[in-house]
Image 1 (cartoon, rainbow, N blue to C red):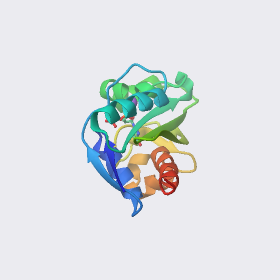
Image 2 (image 1 turned 180 degrees about the vertical axis):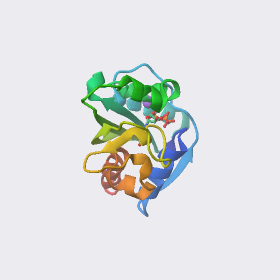
Image 3 (image 1 turned 90 degrees about the vertical axis):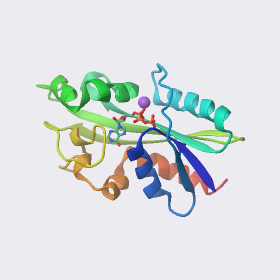
Image 4 (image 1 turned 120 degrees about the vertical axis):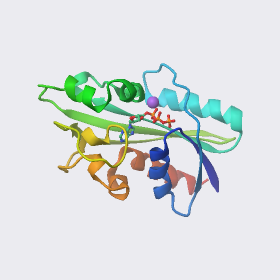
Length: 182
Ligand code: ITT
Ligand code: NA
């Protein structure tokens, strides 16, 4: 069937589209999520899914993602979008200057809603913050995130390579397994 993805982020949509195969036809609706002040990705996703469903009334997906840096107690987390627009990669590198523990996690929560249900799917990937920004592929904090087991950043990977391991791809594959059964 057809599922709309409500997102202002074309890169996000491109990653999901690449994973969607024949099981589901994704169509993008270019609209920003309402940026509610919430402490968790789950809360943001639930709120956005319900709000958009009450507006559009067709099956849809919203996704919220964030970068959680251990040494910063999980910052920026649910505020990642805001921090991207303000501090950006260079600001995060500055905050991390001299900090030895560079562990970080990218998390993704996908919400699917239709007339019968609201379901959440999650994915995460462990890695660390690099010493400098590297690569020009991808988007957002890709240039400073190096997944465990790799010595290149997300921004040095092709979309398909990133999709093998990323937080978003894990969440979406979980969604696909669910969607096949409904
Ligand atoms: P929506 O319209 O779907 O909300 P958005 O870009 O505002 O798009 P989020 O609210 O989920 O998305 O913000 C997440 C931010 O986290 C995003 O703007 C990026 O800066 C960053 N981010 C999320 N996933 C990422 C990824 O895979 N690679 C790099 N940065 C990522
Ligand atoms: Na967000």
